[in-house]
Image (cartoon, rainbow, N blue to C red; front, side, top):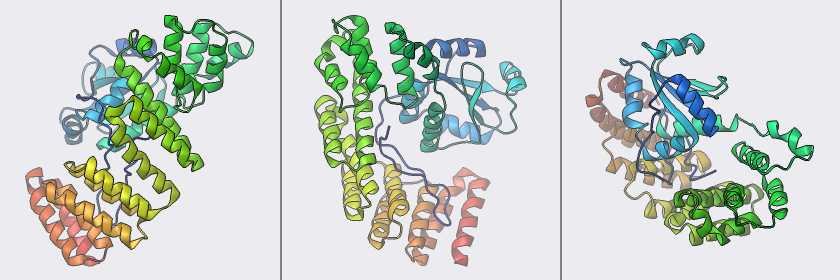
Length: 397
């Protein structure tokens, strides 16, 4: 499930630092459902998805900010369009008022994740930034586990192909292993080339170090004749990520190399970013600061050179993972400076100021914070007051 885990962190004297994933997979933001609440529920049930609801008010500044900066983001769109039915509701009129009768709202925006059964899976008040918003979605997905509804029938001996497929799909969505059940089903089949079995293989190929993944690759052309090519690519990426995560869990370098090699061979367009992200995750897990810094430098060179937010995220990740290591904090400062030099965003300057302060460079930190203050002025009084507060905090240290 990992792309890059550029982490959220709280640095002293800082606002929340955002970190950016490295795998933009589409060229659009969230597609919001155009229909009624009841129609959204029906569609969610048909597709077996959770409903994401942005409950907003037209006068709400943070709501407008999310609508302008978060919902249109490519990474956000790719993730939410794939996993949710997305609905916007003006909570102060029309259907929004009816929605509030069942789902009370005390602040705007309120972000709901609602199962098609009507149960609230997750509810969060307040605007989110890009990476935090994606993490909220990931967290919501782990809270739904429909696999239990198939257990009794399966354990009683029911091997109806549709039931087995739904069981495997439910296990995959819940983050549970479906490999044994999938293997048992496929071994029972005399002809793996039927449309149903090809689609089953696509769903079941959840790990790149599995026999079923090899089946997917062997039958890729036939599967792509039935399903969109991008769906096959996404399954390859997800399977390679699952194997890479297993490599991290067991500190198994050979398994990681297998995931990287298969990504390179079968999804070459995303192989470079996949490798750099997995190398960073691996050396972070191993606690090797030198190799982690080297992986960050490679990422900055190949993936983040023109992306100030990604560079800022590197600084934050280094500070959080290895903040006790002077060499890591110097690298964090370097990346944060690169981001600040590219950016006109006052938040980026404030983050740079925070890194400088952690490195004991108070004068430079104040200079960066004062620059942030000038950048904040076009954004209104609230932004200015926030930066002024940070400057006073810096001066008091």
